[in-house]
Length: 377
Image (spheres, rainbow, N blue to C red):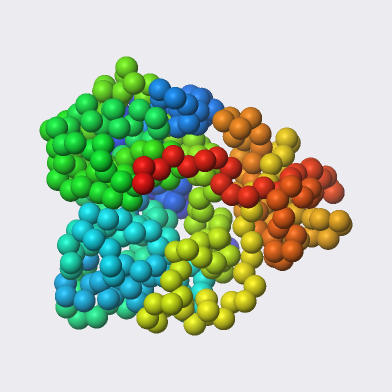
C-alpha cells in the first residue's frame, strides 16, 4: 500500500503580516488566511472598541472586492440580491444577503454605488471564489466584472476616537459622513483611499480601502496618529466579540446554505415586494422562520462531541447556539442562538444550554443586539 502523504495547504497573508508580526501579533487561520487573532490581550482589544477615548485598528484585507460596471448593472444586482439597489444614490452603501433559489444564503455583502452604472461589491473572504463564480454565472452580456481582491487592502478603525484619528490625516471633511456612506479618492496620509463609514463592530468607525502595496504605510500612519488618541491594534478575537455584542451575523454561523436571511433576523434587508429576485419564491413561502435571539449566562458553553450546543426549555430541546463569547464590556458570557419555534424565543425566559456528559448551564433569553449601536445616521 502506498504511503499516504499529508499536503499542507499554504495560507494566504495580507500585506500587513510582517508589520503585525513585529507588533507581537499571534496568528491563526481563518478562511484560508493567516490573520492576527490578538496582539497580546484580546480583552483589552475588545474594550478598545467600546471605551471612551479609545479605538481599535483591524486588518480586513482578506475580504474580497469586485467591480461591476455596464448598462443594466443596477437591474442585475436587484435580481441577484434580496435588498433593493435601485433607488440608492452614488456614495451610498447597501448591505444585502444573496440567496440560492431555495432561500439559503450564498453570502452577505455590501454594495458601494459609485455612479448609475458602476458598483463595488465587498464579500466575505471565505466566499470570494464562490461569490465570483455565482455572480458571473448569472451575469448577462454587456456587464463588466473585475476581481479587485488581490490588489485591494482594507483597514478598519472602530471606536470613539476613530473620526479624530482619520481626520488628523486628511484635509477632506469626514465628520458629515453618514453611516453606510463612502467617499472615493480621499487623501489619507498621502495615500488615495476609499473611505466608508461602515464596520462590523456596532461602534462608530471607518473602513479604508487602498492599494495592496500601500497598506503598511497606511497602517503606520493610523497607528502614529492614534498614539495620543487611544488606538490599539486588534485581531479576530476582538472583532468576533464586537460583532456578537452588536448581534451581527457571521457566515457559517448565523448565515449559510441552509440558513435564510429571514432565519437570521434580516427581514428588513429582504424586499419581498420588489420584482422577482433569486430566492424570492422560497422566501415568500417560508411561513415559520427560525428566531435568532441572544443569551446571557455566567459560565462557558458546554459543547458536545460534534461542537454543537443545544438550547432546552422545560426539558425540550428548542434550538442551538450559533456563536458565543465572553464580553468584557458586559462582563458576561453571551451567545447567539436559533430557536426552531418562536414560541420559546421570549426575552427574560430561562433556558438551559446542554452539552456533552449531560452538563447544563442556565441562561436567560434576551433580544439582540446586546449593546446599543453607535452609528452616525
